[in-house]
Image (cartoon, rainbow, N blue to C red):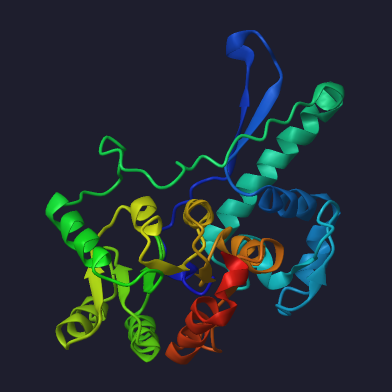
Length: 313
């Protein structure tokens, strides 16, 4: 959530869309949802009686809100999608809230007509078992086969379950300070690491990563990697992730425990699911400046890859 102000003024990838079947002769609407059902539940109930409760406690991240249907554990304020608990006045957060308000208003209009004939199809997870080696997969970013050969050979030279894989997706922007803390934490761990950086890093952040690799570090930094294949590699023992839903599902499919470092959108709820519901990882705690300190990253990695890792595999 701390990084929302660094994002372009455009909505995130929507979790779902409302469409009409008029073109096919049926007036019934349908919702296509690609995020966790927990996120849909949080958003639905926010606009159906719980918005005032959330707003009244929005400055208390530990405050628990018990929502219908979420029986195992309540959501804390910090676990809600970031745009529902935004306190910065972010135009992006406001636009997303309005988008979902319109979605649920439309659903409510159709409710009397479709209530008796509501079909729910749970499709997924849409993740290739055991990783994907299909070279014809569509990738959003250009990649070099020579780079892939290099990092796969590097992984092949590492001991089983020894590598910390780090990737924060393609949207979030991290400051030089955060990158410095991340590198410090990885060095404290003393474990081999593979870090996938993204374009658009803050000035100086890229140099921090390059210097860490040149100074005799025990890691590799790449611009892009085939994440499903990396996660399925026997050498990978931990995934430090932003907890985007695709990344979370890919880690689950590969049996790799996570250290969650969420920053925005549904990532906060996903991190809750990882730690509290599925119990397949832990969530790193940011400091008062919104930065995950190197010491905290090292602590989380050691918890996941140490003696307690068996409970997550």
